[in-house]
Length: 111
Image (tube, rainbow, N blue to C red):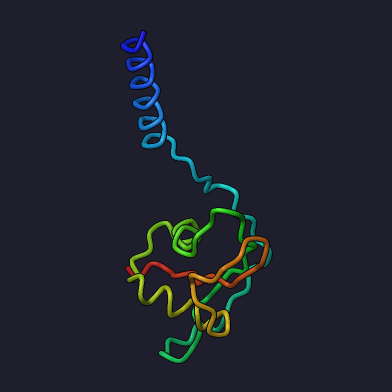
C-alpha cells in the first residue's frame, strides 16, 4: 500500500511541476489600462519617459507590467526602477500595492 501511495504522490508531484513550467501559476493577461498619457518627446536626462497609468492587481510586479507594455524593451532593470520611481514621486518599485494605480514607463524601440 505504501508503494502505491508513493507512486501516486510522485506522479502528482511531476504533474504539478510540469503544469507550473508549461502554464505558470501567476496570471499576466489581466492588466487593465486606466489612462494613457504621453509626455513631450524631448530627449533629455531630466525629462520623464512616456508612461501609462495602470491599476495593479494581486500578483503583479513592476517588471511584469513593464514587460507587458514593452514586449521588445531593452532597458536595464536599474533604469526601469529609476524611471518608475521618478514617475511615482519617489515610490520604490517594491512598495506597490494591489488595487492602486501607478504610472509605468513606456519605452519605444530604439532601432
